[in-house]
Length: 581
Image (tube, rainbow, N blue to C red; front, side, top):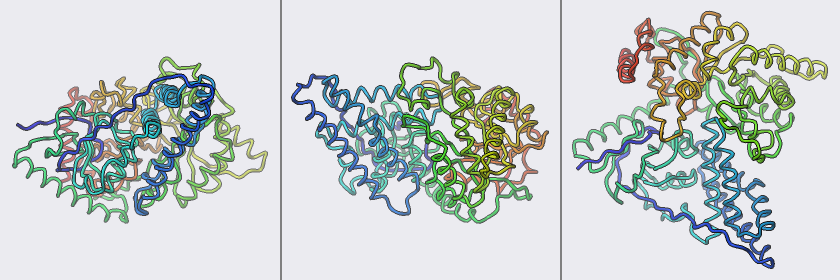
C-alpha cells in the first residue's frame, strides 16, 4: 500500500532512493556535585571537549572543495565562531567553579539561557539560529560523553544515492553527506530559514522538513520518492508513479542545466521591458556567489550579524570596514544596507542580559524603534554607512517604519550625521538615497505618504505576510496558514506598488516571495520591476522574466485580490503562468 507523507518542501528537486534512517541517542544530562579538589579537572574536561569539537569542525571545513558554494564554509564558520565565543567557553567554566557542578550541566544551563534569547527574537531567520546553538552544544556534549559524533558514524560510500531520514541535521552533517552522494533528506523538525535548509538549497539537495514522526512510518532501506518542491514523501509507490517521478526528475535536471545560459543575458521581457534583479546578502563572503549569479546589485544587506554574539555593539570603524568590503566587492553596483533589525535585549548587551524579556517581541522594541530608542548606537551605524558610501554606490534602508513620525526622526538623524561628517571633513556620497521597508500592514497602508518623502520602497514579504495573517511561519502548528496569496497580503503589495507608480518612486521586493518562480509573473502583472532574492534563485527568476510577454499577462489583476479561497487564487496563478508557455 502506498504511503504519502506531507512536510514543508524547502529545497526543490526530485529524488528516488533507499531510506537511511538516522537515530542519534541524546546525551543523558544530569547534574552532580564536583568535589572541591576536582573542579579544575572538570574545567579541563570541558575545555578539552570544546577543543575536540572545534578541531573536528576545522577538519570538516578544510575538506570543503574550492568550488563549493560560499554558504558551505560560512555555516561551518558560524559554528566555529560559537565555539570561540565566551558565552560557550567562559560562562560554563565560571559555573563549574562557582556552583561546583559537572561540565555537562553547566553547558546545558548556558545552552538554555542562549536558547531563551533566540526564542524571543521576532525575525524568523534569526530565531532559527537557536538550532545552531543546539548543534554546537550537542557536539561538545558528545565529546564529554566520549561518544562518536554523528558526522563520523557513517562509513564513506554507504550513503551514495540514499535518502536520509532524521530528526534533524546540522550543516556539517548535511555537507559531509552531500560529499558522500546522498540523494535527498527528510527531517522531523526544521524550518525554511534554518542553516541546514539554506545549505541544502545551495548544494542542490532536495529536502523536506517538518514531517512529524517520519521515522516511525519509514523502514530502513525502503524505496522512497521525494518531491522537494511540494514537500511530498512517497513510500511503496507503484511502478507507474515511480516512472512519472523519474521523468520529472530528468526534466528538472535538464531545466537547471540550461539556466547557465541566462547569466550573460540582460534581464528583459520578450516585449522589451527591463527588470532589475538584485541579491540579498549578510556578509562579504556572499559577494562571489552574488557575482556568479549575475545580480545587478544587492537589494538587501542585513547588518544584524555584526551585532550578534558579542557583549557590546560594533564600533564605527569596524562597521565601516565591513560595509566597505561589501561595496568595493560589488564593483560599483548599488548596495542597499538595512539598518539593524533586532530587539533591544539582543543587541545592547549581546543578549546576555536576561532581566528584560519582551512579553511579545514581535510587537516590542525592535528595528527602527530600537534605533530611535538608542540614538548613539543608531548614529554610529549611520556614520559608518555614510562613510562607506565614499567607496561605492550605497542606499540606506530603514526597517519596520510604521508611520511618518518614525520616518521623520530617522531622516533627521541621518541629516545630523551628514552635518557631523561635513564638519569633520570626512567623505561620503552627498546624494545617497534612503528608503523604507514595507513589512507591516501600517506601512503598506501609508506607502503613498512614504513615497512622497523617500527615494525608494522595498517590500519585505516575510514579515508582511506574518504580521498581516498573525502567523509565525516557523511554528509547525500554524505555519500552514502562512499564505502569500491571501487577498489581504496581495492587496497590501498592490497598494505599495501603486503608491510607487503614482509618485515615480522605485518599488522593490526583497522577501522570499520575490525569489519564488511561481510568483514571478503575478508580480510582473502587478507592476513590480525590482526583485531581490537569494542568489541561488536569481537565474530561474531571470529565465521566467526573459520568457514573459507583459502584454499577455492580465491587464487587471484585481480579480485575484478579491479571491477569498486560496484554491481559487492558486488556479488564477496557474493561469497567469500558463499564458506565456
